[in-house]
Length: 166
Image (cartoon, rainbow, N blue to C red; front, side):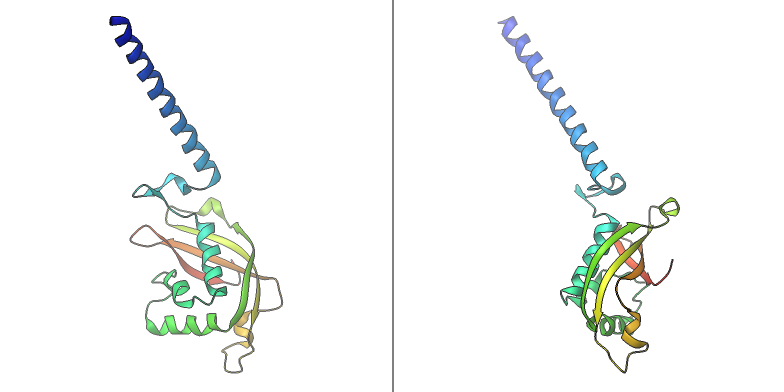
């Protein structure tokens, strides 16, 4: 009887030890792969990495899901309905846009709440004679844009700025 209890306790301890080790290995793999950016989670769900936010943003524009793309922008970028409308006009002028490459920019100066990415894009835009600048500033491909991200009050990454230079 004592042997059975002892064997049960040892088996349970070995099992729990193996589970903990598997969880540690899984966590390390996730952190290395970028699934858990900066090791942060929101209610047990990994936050998307900044790279993923930039990619999703341009994919939404390409899919003509403009309101959703604008919702990904920070209050700084779209402080009011007028700004939302201006961005919407520009995004609707884009016939197609695809991401060629996204890379971190000036990562040594990133903070927990701000990041910048250099996005190489292929964009085709309608020629609108009423546009403030020809083709809304999009040129022959590839187009390079620096996309600044900042976290909002819910700790979610938002597009704060899209610029033609760093």
